Length: 381
Image (tube, rainbow, N blue to C red; front, side, top):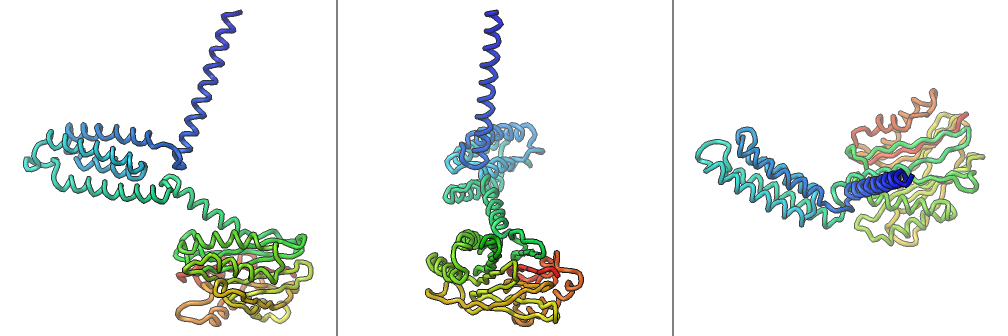
């Protein structure tokens, strides 16, 4: 019995040790992927590839060229920190010297270490060191860089999500960044306030476009999302203007339109800060009407005032909010762009506007090199 208990204790200790080792290895792998861990594993692996390449070059120089030493150098530029990278370069230089001495002068025939080989390896090393120093200065290793960009894009997408509306309402939002990028200077923040009775939505166009404006759009969308519902509707754009002025950006202006919609009565107010007007389709007459409040650009001067325009959505009516990239271009003014947008939207009157937002961007501004956004609300008949 004592012997059996000792065996059980041994296997229990072994399982606990194996579990701790597995957890430690997993944490090390996660830290390394995120850029928080040591790079000694990558350094050791790359150092082992250098003698392997050197041996293959000396035994079969026709198949393994001496310039193959550039491969671990390029990989090291992506994986290693600058200090570790210098050690890898020293090892590669020593291997190159060994290959030159073993293979003989390059004038004796092909597959020798030529001056061109040395230049190729040195150039790869130089660019790898520049990349490693840039990553070290920024503090974002390449393993984490893609994850951070993905997280940034997802945060913008989540913050632009529209809340669910009660039965009888339809809402959709389409956003298309300039140049096919994943980041945009246009964004939407929306929330249901007043106990869920009111929908507040803010469509903003930050100066710039694409990735250049994406970081500022993320910062503003978070700030605007915090302000939305925390202030009376008439005070939102004034507070947003003050926040933008405090940032003191070189390109510190933005346009914005703020919709406050009563989901029970259909009455609404629109506040505008230098933004293109909204357009409303009146189902009774089939006519489109422009709706725009009065107010200057955000971030231009302090103490700006923003006056609202009021309206009401009857059953069957449609309201569209959009940015200037959808209706304005170098070869046409904004009035022509709005006429084209409403003309394309007339095609959906008989079939309904579900799924129309994206198709309207495709039809009106498919190849425009600017961010384009469209927020569409309709009250079902």
